[in-house]
Image 1 (cartoon, one colour):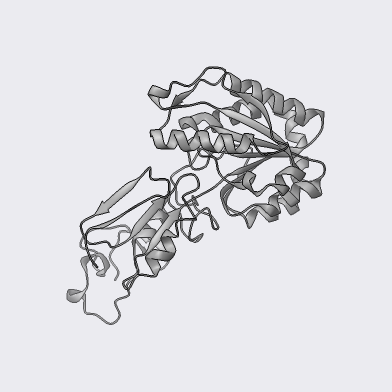
Image 2 (cartoon, helix red, strand yellow):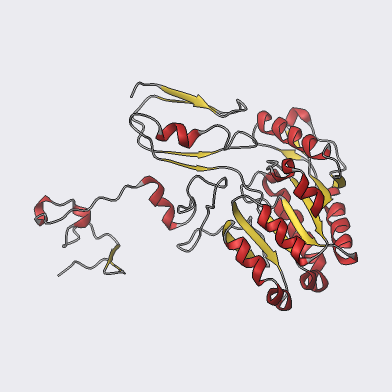
Length: 321
């Protein structure tokens, strides 16, 4: 392998140079660069393939069902506004799509969310290139026929501080299904509210989605009884299903799955958060029939390093008799 290895993302915001041995790689891509760059394919096509786990694009759909709206619409609005704008919308699990059954309750909910977003102040984004890509994404969305602005930050962003300003758009299910460009992530504090006419149309929206890191349901107990088919669809679309909470809360724990079907990641079997995340950087090796003094200390029966190990499916620091 010839060194150095150089490269970058498709929009030119990020460049890299590697001047040492390249053992494995993880990628996080923004905007339109992600799956079009072919990073994983090109890495696997090398004479000496490089294992790649790429976390790419996710819109993290959030479904607001009728019973939940009647019970706690204001609380959902407050939590959703915070989830969309935290970190200036630069969290990979920001809810970028909000689906619900049309009617007076959902219309009132959308209007309230618009007012909340209007009050959100602009804030500094990570990089001028990311800010510019965000504004291009907003412009792309607002020029799609049938998309209307529901609310936008009332204060102008400061260009010298690379600020991004929050915005929420609205459309209906038929228009969303018609325009594939509405299925593309806008990386930043932007979200799209989509109104469906029936449960069947709500399920069609879920069916149309690509792979996601998360899918969220806000539902009452009664809603869940009607949403079994919707939940079954979302199980196939996302790595983490969230109920009556928001996807931007990611706990580091053994059960966390921060990954999902393509194009959320290149391999849905892995996670980039939680104790299982180490598997992205490890290659299993089995030592068979070796004497103890020829084994690495980590796998010797006596456990000389006192490590926590899994032995016969149980965690223990005890030596193996």
